[in-house]
Length: 451
Image: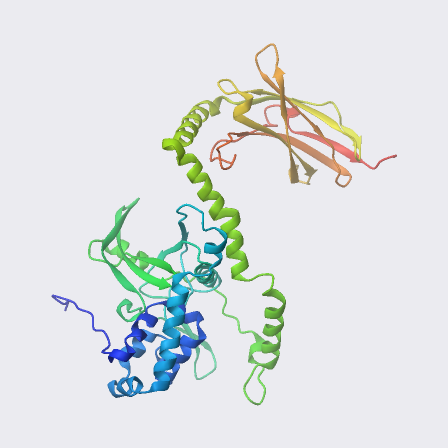
């Protein structure tokens, strides 16, 4: 029987404990030891049995225990300290981004992932990808980076593993009750995505991850037909790793896996200084997010003048591209010595385009047993004029410096524009075709000097 109306029941907290609810609804607690100790101190057994879920803990704890905590000066001091640290953290004072990039104009980064591993109780992740995505959000929050996460709200998260009475590993699937998780439904907000089978509508859940927001899309709503509702029914499974690591199960008399602990400590000490999330996300911000943002601002300047010119140029290139052809490639050398130079020339039929519209390149490398160039290096070709047939001429000097043996080269044509973020545009590439002209994909023997 379906309800005619729904409502959410929230825990009844004494006034002095009201900050607990604010702490519980920000997953910053998942990497704040002081906050975790606060919940443990309130009800250790419930913390463990709830799967480290503070919302379930606060909704299940005996009211008398809450009243006692509200009269405990030591607990209240602990709560005050954790709440004040969260407020200071959320203010962003002293964050890396505010310190290093305070003049950046309106940067906003969206980080999309099929799973996010942030806290055990929010079971929307399976393993490495989710943990990486979750750590990316945590590090971005610590750094003060203006980033939001976008993912999926799975009704049934990844399975929980346990050992049965016979010692065999088993899996148990559990439904996520979104109303008892540290997430909130965004009111009056739904999105619609056009899919091959028809439009799919999703409601949106919001998660506070420190200074950031994570938005989770949920298709399990009445507006969708059954197949669409199942899109976010369960997290993908697949043939995931389920082997037992022997070192972890080699226990001392006190039950601790000493060899595994020693290995983990050594790994952390060695790797963390070089491969930590703060360093990685800082590099992402400096080398990708901010670069893309500045390019966006540049294209949008002066009423998007550059963006309009780029779009017009791209339309011209897409129209002319099917007519481009590598007409011929010339060089008469079949064998050279290591370090010698080769002059490669090519006739490129550009037709409606100009040499400034394209990047013509030589791809050179060793030739394998299948006749394919491997581990190629790229050498740009320069325009040298036109021949009597109005075909554009290009030339490059190549100097093989790799090992001796059979080597080869071919020619590649790509679009080129100062405002194009990359020359690799889908369907806009022309390669010399050796099946049409044997000279177009040339091979030569590279011998040792002095032989």
